[in-house]
Length: 163
Image 1 (spheres, rainbow, N blue to C red):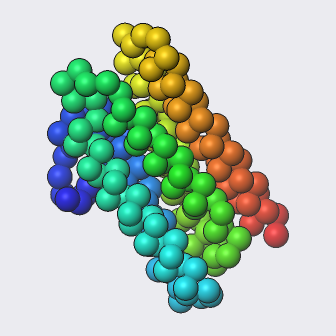
Image 2 (cartoon, rainbow, N blue to C red):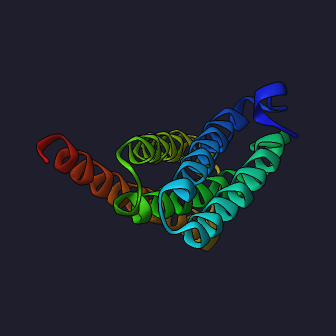
């Protein structure tokens, strides 16, 4: 399945597909980075981005389906946070063009985490007990990690503009 030629099966899956698009941006930036520097590292990061993209494409199909618990939404948010972190960690190793693409991937992944968090918070209102607490902890952790990646990318881009 490719996010570009298929729509998601559930409305709640749209943010996961946005995360898949972000993963594709990182894959593309890594291909550009392989031409300019550490090709082994770029290959590894590109492969990780591809794996996250594939995971998000699958999660988009099942996100919020038929009143199920929000587990797939939480998993998608955590995957997007992983993607944002992965992208932020390689910014300094890329050419300016590839770094800008990667910063865009960070921003899209962070936005997807925010959208997924809103969906989870809505669904979590119907949950009870420890399960609800764990769902909310996981979604807050995804938001925190995505926010940190966004700050790293923003600081890096400011340095590009100044430098």
